[in-house]
Length: 285
Image 1: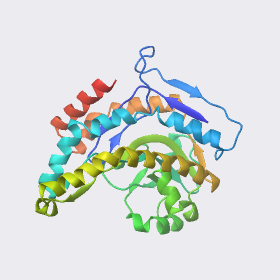
Image 2 (image 1 turned 30 degrees about the horizontal axis):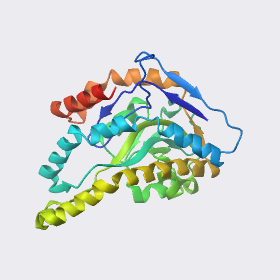
Image 3 (image 1 turned 45 degrees about the vertical axis):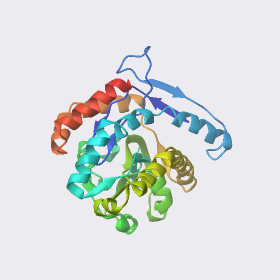
């Protein structure tokens, strides 16, 4: 079991917060990666492996992410959702988990293997840009049609999470390989119709908001546990997981950072939002 950790770099899009694994220490420079290797002779489903993986998962930059989505950037987006979609955000966002690359026939051992592949994503300028950055072709087949499209070879792979692969049993549709680079953390935003919300009494509004607020930390922990279990499940069903080398992650990250202004403009992220995210992350370091 390998775990790669480096200083965080974040980039927000309208659909997701883009993140990389991070540990913040004063003894390491911003661009210097730390590699911690943990070798266990027991199988991935063994209780010890599960325990150690849970320990490592808590070192991920999830706290820094929550400072963004629970802080001013999240509030700014909630206001935009209310104004443009006619919906009310009832509370903190729910983590889905880290997104990775998955393929059917072609083994994925490095980013170079993605070149020329047709990769499905669930939409948004950020994911399309990332796919093209890797030399692949983006595809946005609707989710209900993904399994059939995979089995028919409509596309060569997809960007999603271990839990999504496991729950949809995508190994039955041909998925055999995964490049686990933790490219971003998907988030669900809990919303209700604004027309419905305004019909509720203040007491009922407080009830809905309070219940979500009181339980969201448990919901987030449950989602993290589900992702950990799913990682074991997909391997048990023959999906080979490769984690990119720290050097490749760092080199690719630096190249992507150079394009950040472009993707911010392409995603139509406001200067106010970008400033809010930058301020929160500066404090998180």
